[in-house]
Length: 292
Image (cartoon, rainbow, N blue to C red; front, side, top):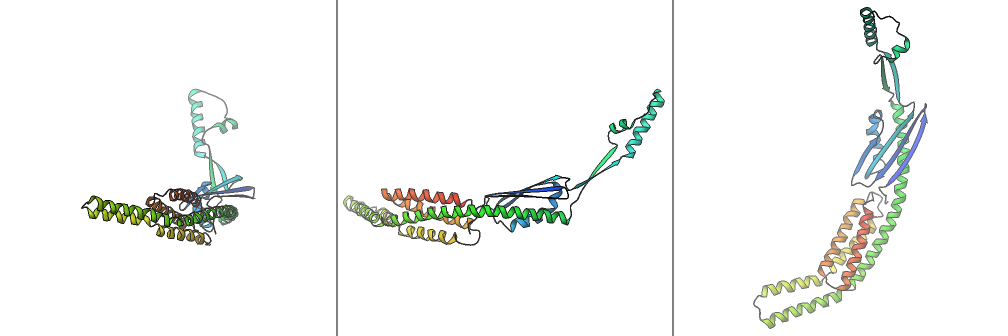
């Protein structure tokens, strides 16, 4: 099955006056990579969330965003810092006695004193909360996976269209083998005749040139390998497993054989076909970068 590495999903759930919202975005990446943006208290669930993601995706960068609203998952407590308050009161009594200042300290004045209240937050992180988070995350991952599957269908169709064009161009290339070989036979004959006419004694060089021309005259092996790689793409794209890396490798082999043909032949028709082949292969290569 062809899956894209681009996907998105979101969901939220409200319980006990708390709302948890989760979003997942996935983009292409060579491996499976994670990014979590969430309240610090949720970091204890990170390993469990990674395991959940691995159940759905094999490749891609997965960004998980978790937002909590409402009462949240923290319990806040406020305590009086009696030590600090006593120091304030003792200091005020000392000021009164030394400077003959009168007056009473009002409650509103106490509230303005800095540091007399201590706030403490305790995270209510338990098994129930973990189950809630993982449940919401699974719903989001399912949505993202469906999007990746739908886009994968489009990618598969596009890759197969380009493969069919590559196959057509390769068979067209095959039809030029005889004319290419005839061109090089003429060149070989001319080179040998030139050697005989000039009476040059550098026979080894002539032999090397003739051998090189003979090698360039034969592109049949490259064509056979091109058609073999085309068949591999058609077979691979039907596999029920991640295929992105394998397709990327086959695409590189397609391009390598095409470049070899281009370097061998100076035939005008062959050069045009090689340019068209490269264009189709590059289009496949671009699409394969986003296949899981």
